[in-house]
Image (cartoon, rainbow, N blue to C red; front, side):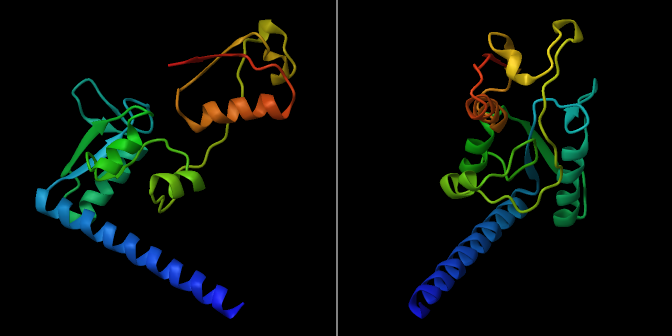
Length: 177
């Protein structure tokens, strides 16, 4: 028992040291470049989207500017890189972006399998179904054969499939964008 606890403690310590070293390497790289490269949504009003003049605004944008201000004492030293749901984690892993500030669900599998670290949750949301009232539906279980739109490669898409499987309801056809 003591050996098992000691092994777990050593493993956790090694993991934390590796994470700290990785974070330090990213910070050093950002400082050398003189700009923070922030992976953002392609355009989610309220979270991150460029206006007609190309100026980015939104909650995620403000987070990136706050990080840039903390590093450089200048919130303008940030470059936004619009990323799709499919490209966002690869861009972070490859170093194309220094930080990812866009809608991304923190999951244990993403931490473990992708080697990503979700340091804090800055927005908590939920999921639901919205349908036209004229359809006369009283339950999402009645969506069998209907089209449901979601972003491909997202947790939302997985949750949709899980919901219908768990409720023994026929899955609707899925249209992704």
